[in-house]
Amino acid sequence: MLKLIDSLPLPMLVIVSLTLGLAPFVPEPHLLEKLRMLAQGTLSRPIDILDLLLHGTPWMLLILRLVRMGLGKRAG
Image (cartoon, rainbow, N blue to C red; front, side):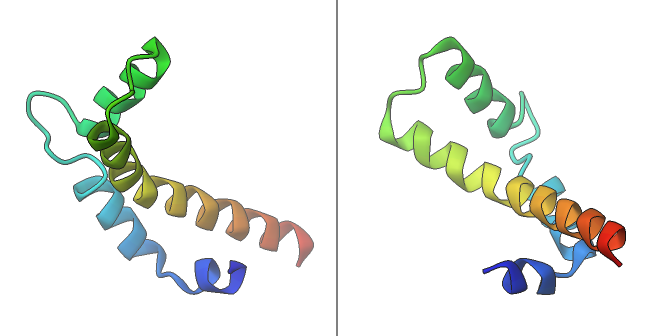
């Protein structure tokens, strides 16, 4: 699984995170809305949970990739 994350091109992850991860841009990104709902404890509908997963996945992959790159530089 980590080899798959390491093989993902960083520019692609950045583009996908900024587009799909933040869509729709107006009135506010879905990811921010769903994270706010999660913090308030109102994230209960299945469609909202799916939205959080779909819009949050690119960001999680980007973060994992950056962490893996950082750990690789320290070890090497």
